[in-house]
Image (cartoon, rainbow, N blue to C red; front, side, top):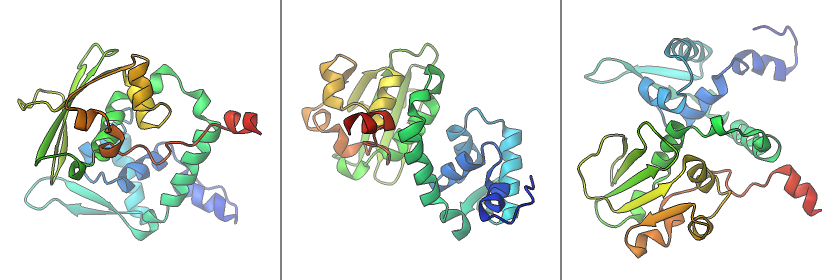
Length: 231
């Protein structure tokens, strides 16, 4: 889309203004490299459109496509041009926390995206032993209410099928509340006290969840309504 304006904002939006583009860049900058990984973080984006956007971003110089060694398919890596967008996305997110958070609907609590974020947030080095298994029972989900995260020293994996390993910590919680916990809108202690979260496991792990599940980089940012009300 050409705006035919010399303004640098207009020229930037010719590249970044297409639907899903900035969210695709978000996923790449968060470490997703393969097509199926990108799909997990963009579950409502069609594979056809995802393919189209990847081609566009590669042509524009934001991504480099590399063949996966010894396998079919490709991986996509951000260029310096793409990495320079991180503070831009961060500012958009801060603005969203200030001014757009009140527009959240029940449909926005995306379970698959939540699990992608949680997978990225687990601090395996702060969990005892070489491997830890977390089981999530989402009380408001009919299909596939049970999810597992297996956190090891060298990798963290999300499973919807029981991996057959002994579980270290059980989370009984709704998707909405787990999103709110990760976003820092409610504390784990508060959720437990209000009966919104049932956490089972060794006290050494359950009493300090924030130590090994890193919250969103936007956690703690208040909506504008609260900021304005406090002044």
